[in-house]
Each structure stands twice: as structure tokens, then as C-alpha cells.
Length: 498
Picture 1 (cartoon, helix red, strand yellow):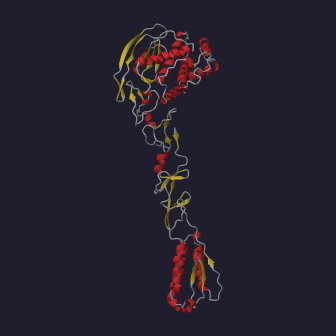
Picture 2 (tube, rainbow, N blue to C red):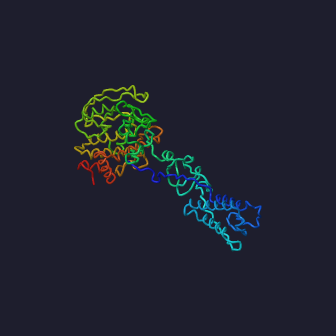
Picture 3 (tube, rainbow, N blue to C red):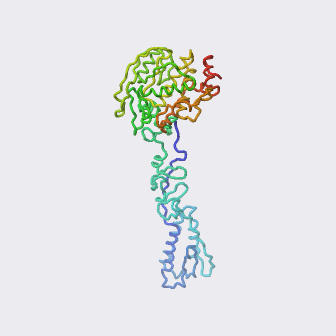
């Protein structure tokens, strides 16, 4: 699975600038100097000289009667020329869109110097330039450094990360929605982390975040963990995290702590569950008359038993139960092992010779699985036994495995969702409420119910032709025609009714 980063995320540059003293301030300084220049020789009398005055903030200028140019000294003329030159130089430095007001000022000075005492004069209004207002504090930005980004201007100390609240001083930042972030803060908040190693999931060569996700548990993890021998729970399929260690069952399987909580570890512990499922069958008028032995075994013992079978279809890559029809000697778990560190220890096995007394020799199930998963395997294998004992012969894997999965799914539903229809569209006159409860004392925990929902999900979404497609075809027939009519149709035709 690959995804791009946050759709609203991008790296944006911060444009740093320097605000020189405002034009009003420069004009104030300049006019004070001009005023001082024209008033510097005030000993000659202010009433006879030309004086430039400033009226408040409106920058309105007017002139008093000018005295003759012959009365000005040579030094005053030089200072006046210098003032005009400075004004012109300042105009040349400004951009076209920012110098209109100063050109008006320069023109007013030139006209005021050239007009005669009797020439009429209209005051010139100079409008100050628009001020830059900070997008953070909404105050005017004076002279000094400023930032230009996100369509606004900012004091450097006002442009802050939406996550940590500290100023953003880097040249680039991340934007999510209308909020700026430090790139590191945005990554911490929005970049997905691996649920296994707890590190940021790396991007691939295309710059996309590529990860794997479990379809039920929504565990997101780096693709590398599928090939780096990270332990996976043999029951719920979740990968072991760096913070929680799984239990090694000693036969190549690992078990998470949540599944370990309800795990069945030896044959004796499994007997009550086995008999309750036989009672479940009897409640649907599918009584199994023969006493079929049931054993909990290690993985190696189950694989050896599979090799000894002449016929049968097995779920790959992992078979967790077997309805045995041949005589064999099988080593079963005789005593519940102890947990030492992160592995099982002190396991006792006992070899048991199985003799064929009917069409079914024994039912074998892997040890160490949670109660609900163990029960669903038993329900599946008991259906194999029922079909053989009732004379259903030469069924295709799709039909036989499919109807066995339906019974497994029905039993799980009765355990996980007892209020639901545990026997879909059957014509059998018994209800799930009349069936003996197979639950532990005190009911099931939320974790166990969630595991049950996962096992139901596994059956419904299995992709194998026999177990997956077979279940969906068999379940559709049972929902439409009922379990009894579906079984009768299978007996006479070898297939599902349509």
C-alpha cells in the first residue's frame, strides 16, 4: 500500500526582508533639516524669510513670503543645492510604485524655491504609503526584519509553529490547512509510524510512503518486516512489536500475549470444549454416535500425521486440524507446559496408538491456540467426521471443505454473537439458546470477543479455492435453502443447490 503525504502539506519558503525607516520618518527627518536650514539664519528675521512648515500628520506644506535671493549667503545656497540633490537621489532609489509621494514633495520644494513672494500657492497634500501589518499580532511592522509568506507579512517572532508554538526560523516550513509547522513537528504529527518498530515508515523511490496493513487489525508496518524474521502470532497474525515480546511455542510458532490468555495447552484441558461442540451438533439433529478420540498435538506430530493420510485436502500453508482416517501412532500433549521467559518449557508428550474402529480414527488439533480458534477447528473437523460417518462419499474439496467451514462459522457466531442467527436459514427446530454454553465461566472478555470476530473474518475472506470459495458457495446455499435441504442435495448430487 502506498500513499502520498498529507494532501495539504507542502514546503513553503520564508522570504526574509529588511524594512528601512518608514517614509514618514525619513520625511520628518528631512523636513526638520530643511526647516533648520531655512531657519538657521533666523537672526536676520523670520518675517522676511521663507519657512517650510509641517501641519500635523497630514504632511501639508505652505510657505511664508520669501525674501530676496540676493540676501542669502553662499553657504545657504550650497546647503540648499545639497538638500535638493539628496531628495532627487532618494527618489532614484525607490521603486516606481513607491515614490509618487516623494516626487510630490520634491516638486513642492522646487516650486516653493522658484515662486515669487506675490505668486499664489496652493498647499500640497502628501498621502503616506500603506503600512505593512503583521499577520500574527496585527500590529504595524516598523523598520527592521520581517517575513513574507502565506500571503502576509510577519514579525519574525510572530510566525510560529501551530504544534509547538515556537517561532519558525528555518528557510522552509510545512503547511497543513492554513497552519504553518516546523517540518520536524509536522512529520511527528502526520507522518505514519510503524506499529512494529515504532519508527517513521520510510518513503520509497518515488517519494511515496509505502507500508503494509493488516486487513482486520489495521496494523501498519514497514514492508521490510515481512522479510526480516519478525515473529508473527500463529493465531491472530499480528506482528510482534519492539515493546512486547511474543511467546515461542517451541515448534516454530509464536503466540501473542492476548491469544495466550485463552490458549488451550493440553488434551485434558480441551475435553470440555470438545464435548460442548458435540452437543452443539446434537442440538441441530446431527448427533455423532461414535466416540471419536481428540488429541492436542505439536506441529511436527500433525505434519507427520498428514503425511500418513492417503486422502484428504489440507489448508496450506498451515494446517491446524485433521480428521484422521488411518491407523497411526501420534504423540499428544499430555501435560500443560509452563511459561519460562518468552517460551514454553517442561512440556510432556505421550505417544498414543490410534486404531481404526470406524470411518474416523481421531481428530487432531494444534495445541496452544485460543479457545475460540480451537473450537472453530474442532467444529470443522467434526463436520468431516459426520459426513464420513453418514456415508457422504467422493465429495470435491470445494463442497466438503466449504460445508465444513459453514459449520465452523456457525459455531463461532453462536459464541461471539449469541443474539445473531447462529444457524442461518436452517429448517431445524432448535434454537441456539437451547444449546449448552461452551464459554468459560464469567463470560468472554472484550479481547476474546475481538479475536472471535477476527476468526469469523478469516473464514469469510479466505482466498483459497476450497476453503474460501467453497465456504461462500456453501453459505449462500444454506442461507437460501437451509442447512437440511443443502445437506440432502449434497448427498444426492455431490454439489450445492442453486
